[in-house]
Image 1 (cartoon, rainbow, N blue to C red):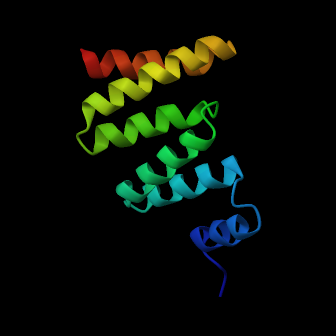
Image 2: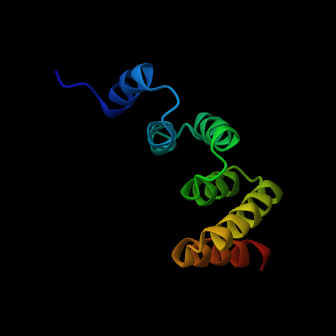
Length: 105
């Protein structure tokens, strides 16, 4: 019987517990399974340790929106916008601005 993705990610994290990509992937796997609270906690922890992990800002904002935490979503999108500007990442900047615009509208 093949090992499911969640188990694989957990096993990989045992070897590399601070790997930002693995932590991000695990959070997204929890989100895909409907475990939004766990996904939020994992992304918050990821950003605490790796505040430059730009893609996490959009996903965390989306999770906040899905759990009716709009003020937190707005705040995290704004942090992501600032970081995207600093990093010169126009694609992510556009996505974050759009999400922010949709939420504030």
